[in-house]
Amino acid sequence: MAVLIRSVVQPGGQTIALYQGDLTEEAVDAIVNAANTNLQHGGGLAGAIVRRGGAVIQEESSRIGPVPVGQCALTGAGALPAGHVIHAVGPRMGEGDEDRKLASAGRSALALAEARGFRSVALPAISSGIFGFPRDRCADILIGEAEAFCRARPGSALREIRFTLIDDETVGHFRREFARRWGEPGEGGSEAR
Image (cartoon, rainbow, N blue to C red; front, side, top):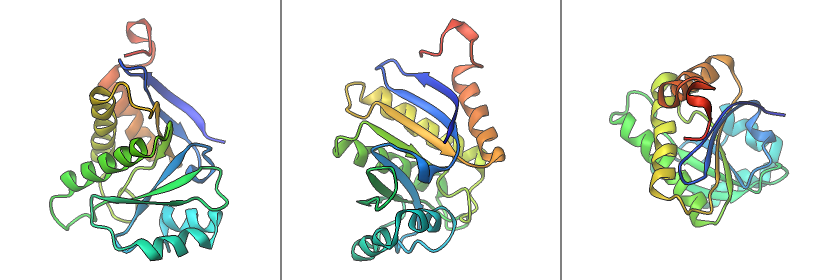
């Protein structure tokens, strides 16, 4: 079970939260997979999602791909506790224009969740694993996209955006980015921002 690290309520009432735990165990409307353009889920988080959710996720993905970098696609979640999987294709370091492409992947995942009427979504640190994207920049970009989404769509059905991360180092980068944006917990007397 994921452990809540930090939660900040946005002006429109949506929550942006940081959890440490296994993304494949999240019981949300959708989890976001850090996918490759061909939606072949062999390694990293994508491989873990298919191992836990079943081959049906790969079978459905194979009928959809390829998906351009910065975009996403939706499949069922098989045996996962989540309702759906949003496969967001992030950039590989060295391919060029990585920051813009990562921002687009995060923005596309949130837009798809909203379009489907989902109330909750859990994201990983897209591209920061085997794709080599620096974790501090990943935290800045993805949290920034979540905050911008909440600011632009306060009435959205999407009420909770979680970042669910498994390793201490990545959690540390995201925790520092939360603190940079919203101060340390308890500063100013409230987590509501």
